Image 1 (cartoon, helix red, strand yellow):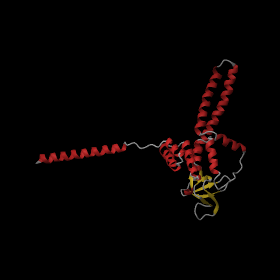
Image 2: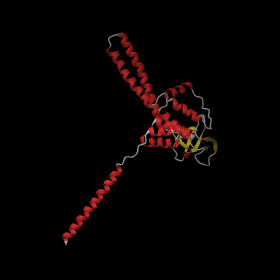
Image 3: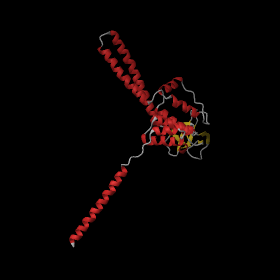
Image 4: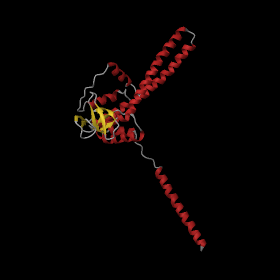
Length: 266
């Protein structure tokens, strides 16, 4: 009798083990099933075939699963522009410019999209040197300025070697002057790279996404109405400490509060 019970227990354990192994193998096979990867070529094909809604879906899928890319943001902006969703087009053009501020095509398309917005704001005047420095900084991205800094640093070391080890006075002068100039360029490149990195990480600007929004004097619906903004307008974020409201400022200096849901931060 005891032997029968013993063998019954062993048989039950063996059966449960086999089922558990089968289940685990099925789970493993499901886990190992490859997920279909969306490629840029697929999204580009949808765009070329004027299937802009599908192109938007594919480009956003790529951004969500494969990370940020200048080309993807640019093409996504173009797709939204073709669908006449100007605010979303501007958002993606702006994000593309953050990654590659020196790209003329992105800037041109951004300005084209901005020309279709309602609000026209005259920026406050600023010193010419400040404007020139901003434009110079925006000729390259953080990576571009960083690469330039590395290259000029290496060249500076070579010129220093020429100065220290050359026996000819003329070559020593060339090495010394070149090393000083390259050092200055290296410092400037690193400063600009740091500036571009800070700009990319600060998320200090946003785009109005609501068709129209009334800017308030205080962060609540009971605040005084100041002015109205429409979708596609770029604003700077002055106060980002509150969850439901953000204090924004226009290029002409006007400022106020808008609901967070009405904007998309770049």
